[in-house]
Image 1 (cartoon, rainbow, N blue to C red):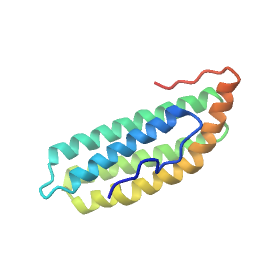
Image 2: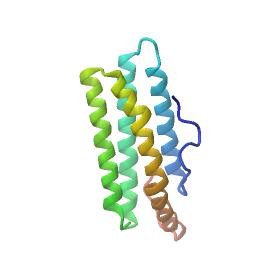
Image 3: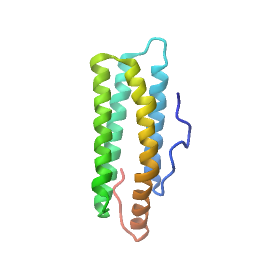
Length: 144
């Protein structure tokens, strides 16, 4: 399985679209590793660690920007981030403890992409719209 280019809805804030694209590429790289006849465990672990770090940084940036603009739905959006990071950490920890390849595949190929598509098309779309309005009024945002 691979996630097609432009599978994630573009956002009004290009930096958000870029972060989603980076995660799509990271997932596709993981799919390639998982499809190998003899999976390279060390490489999979390194890619999982990189995805977790990237996603954590991504969510921290979004959370910071929502606070900058005093975004009212911030608690709900942040809770979604926290739940997603918790699920990701749990799936990756389970993999590292058990090397349960089917469970890791299920999370990476089914659960995570479905969550990303839903989150990007709903919460991120609305958040990006408000961030863009803030920018259009001369406000600054904190994207790295």
